[in-house]
Length: 299
Length: 286
Image 1 (cartoon, each protein chain N blue to C red):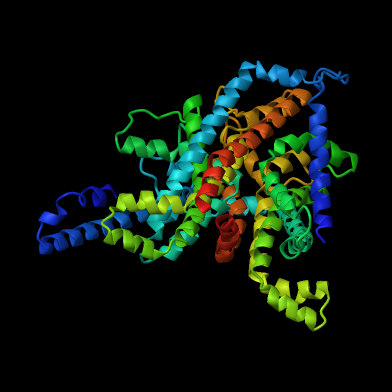
Image 2 (cartoon, rainbow over the protein chains, first blue to last red; image 1 turned 45 degrees about the vertical axis):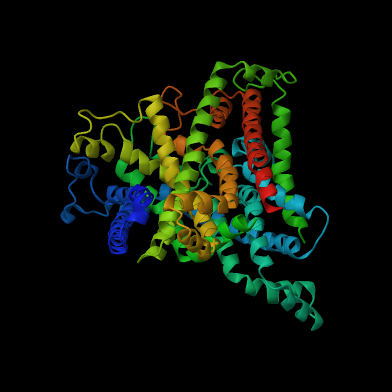
């Protein structure tokens, strides 16, 4: 990129037009090549680490640890996937993560849309403070709340219990869900709602028949984000569960001990943990990007 | 309508928060017994003079400085790169979501596979290029491990910052650049006087949000160091020290004081960004 900047400064006025044009064209051609190269480099950076883990899950580690990694397709094996996906002690956390993720998402969406709709449509005292409070939650390190939450859940018999995780994740995810949904609801034109009101719709009907359908793509993206959040959590699940309710990230992290590491199993578990959220993120990419980013840029 | 959500958040986060403050006022170590006397602010006074805390604070700030400032600078540059028209631009932007979506635990495993001292691909590549004769023990040296941590975290956080900046760039009218070109402004001058000032909003948001996230990093440290915050405490940030104190030493009181200090640090840094940048952007608008 430096090449495009320094050449342009001095001799411009003295050079004949034709030479200038040629130079500019040549510079632009070089710029395009350089640009392509940088984009390719970026792509490699973004994808290679994950692809390398993927390779680790389907090749014996010895083949990948040679001076020249041996990627002969004959060496491909799905054995570690077969082993993990038939192992009860792996399937249980997987099911737990799915159940907790879905339940948290549903609860967050129901409570969150009501709250976000109120913030988006009504001007009430403390509205601004409420929005700010939602953002402040992002600043709280989970470690502050870990021990008290542990004590609280144990007192209610919810330690190492899926319900305990759902309740906790809901509390941590709701602020983010509300924050995103406010943005989506604010994009629904108020005039439509006014018209519905004149036609005799109740507040609830307006929310369910007008606002929700119009904000549906954004709501889907928010739901996916809520799911990704609870699916990916490691710390809370580690502190608040032991065996029965343990989740996939905790199980996956356990393959990486302090000294020894079962590379193939760790990589396989890593891929299995990542795939569902990767697929969801890519399916809803347009709206996730929109929801994550627009509010921030506008504000 | 807003009540149920607010009630849940306030109850489930507010009560534990209060309880943490309460615990931090006690000499409360579950290893030493069940008696825990009230000591007021003693825990906080202790941590101000604790060498371990000073070192952890320095590591936290090192990590945050590189991930936040480095992250924002790189994000702006990558956003400019991706804002140009080229075939496949949409695909590249979508693929930005891959690192963003990868769970932190998986991120730790990924980089462990790459930077492992004896078998990682990083060493294979470096030795193949002749850049080093012997295997670099990335995860056995405190400083190197911290830098690997910065690198690993950067991979995961960059895409979100890039998406922020790309959205910001799209808000700048193309006419502004055209006018600047006609006036003979160089690419660098256009970047400095058009791109950067117009990105002030997204940059400020990125600085605040990324500071929050960087100051409370946990999962990646845990997985990369096998839950030790090592080697030799080299990746033990304030947050991680609070974890070790609470869950390894079972020192609940001191651990709570550390955790709350970590939180205060996040608030202080956030307010610092607002004070530094918020006022200036307000002046521009009027």
